[in-house]
Amino acid sequence: MERSNEWGKRMGDIHIMKTTGILRNVDELGRFVLPSELRQTLNINIKDSLEFFIKGNEIVLQKYEPTCIFCGNANDIIFYKNKKVCLECSDQLILQN
Ligand SMILES: [Zn+2]
Image (cartoon, rainbow, N blue to C red):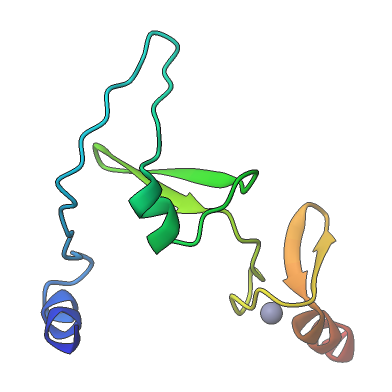
């Protein structure tokens, strides 16, 4: 783990991808089944939201967890003008203004 992080740093934004060996076919409506092994590994449960990202020609699928736009904190999130801000950062913003 530590070794791959170091390698990732040296290579800039390149991250090592681990193959799972799992293939899924997309059906005629664009659906596919997210393998249960991956759901368990990534703690994805029924009704959880998933967020899609495009990275070059790759699709990155991530469990949707709202985090603060300033610090990445996932606790005590409030929405301000459609952006997620944690209470701590919102307090700091108030103090600065
Ligand atoms: Zn924050």
